[in-house]
Image (cartoon, rainbow, N blue to C red; front, side, top):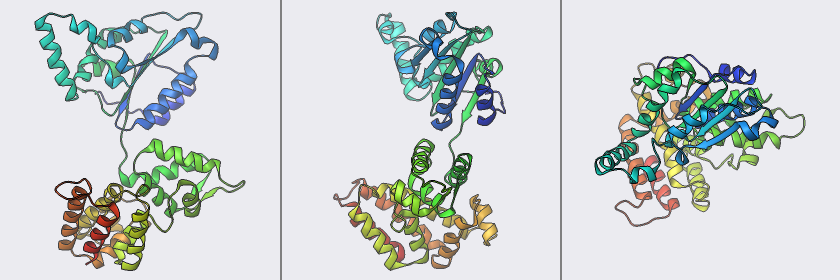
Length: 372
């Protein structure tokens, strides 16, 4: 894909100011920004009175690239432009299945091969090759939007270069775990609020990297904020998002890092009584990166606070405290043993080569082995 220095903020600004391009290809592993930009284009491209005849929303699984191109070639009715949006564009087909069934044997074999390629994530890229001809002279009165999630086009293909030359190609990249607290801070700031460090960590630990889910929970929280209150605390997060301030994975990690046996057992006991809110798979998905990072800390050249922050790519000193404490309590050899235990109990939780055991019991065993 040709390099494009297009940011979400600059692209959204152009859309809100009705500076449109003929084609938008919004793609990437993070659907949050893809959906926001798609919604912004839908909101700004047409007047409400123009939508009935000039707005077409298609879904990749229900249409073909040929049908999309034909729709884009139409002229608007009593309006300056028409809007064609293809949602879930990664599911677009080259031709309808009923057409393929009527093909000759040789063509059928080719179609079967293409179906196999699609399972490997390749066919969807080939589908868009047919778009190149339209891109040579796109209709100026059409805005064509592709909403393509959980992947990207092959940048070596001609259609990729044509898309970048004629329209806008935006890649929405998945954020890493250590980027989520900063993202939460920015999201809240744009709404005119502040958020405490621990509150950020609790949300990040509990909700993971799903930006749509985080944004939804934060928006619900902001609606319930007391009048005049502009600061989000861990107490507000606990009350409105359903994360216990005392009994959450974030606190379990702190207890394990400090080898606080009593606190760790209290938290695990709470998890056992509430398996639906804290399933084993979720707990393990958060414990594993902590102990994996611990291994990096042990082999870091600079083991100071600033050195660990740099080694792990952390932005806030509050994130380093647990690692520094844990380094005093666990040797490198023990960390390797713990990582092996996490893998073992992940398999047990999924019933692999073991009798079905409640999540709470498995977690109690695991925590005991980690701290002893």
